[in-house]
Length: 92
Image 1 (cartoon, rainbow, N blue to C red):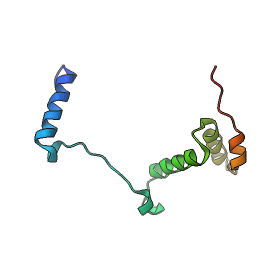
Image 2 (cartoon, rainbow, N blue to C red; image 1 turned 30 degrees about the horizontal axis):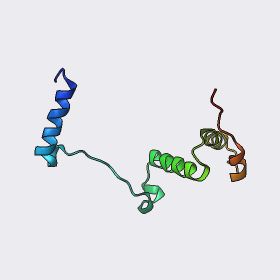
Image 3 (cartoon, one colour; image 1 turned 135 degrees about the horizontal axis):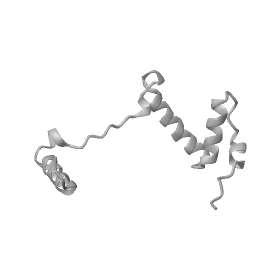
Image 4 (spheres, one colour; image 1 turned 90 degrees about the vertical axis):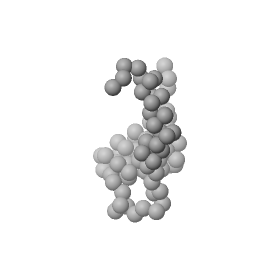
C-alpha cells in the first residue's frame, strides 16, 4: 500500500485510536487450568509440556533435548537427579 513503513504504522495507530472496536489489537489468552486434555490441540499440549519441563528441570536446553530424545525413542525420561547431572553445552 505505502512505500513508507512508518506511515503505515502511524495510520494503523490512528485507526486503532478512532475505531477501537474494529482495529483493536487482539490477544488470545488460554487458561489451561480450566481446560481438559480433550479440549487441547496437540500444539497446546506441546507448549504446556515444554513449559512444565522448563519449570521442573530449569531452562537447560541439553536436559530438554535429552528428555525429548528419550520420549521419542520410547524410553523412560531421566529422573530429576539424572537431569540435574546433564550439563549445559559449554560456550566456546
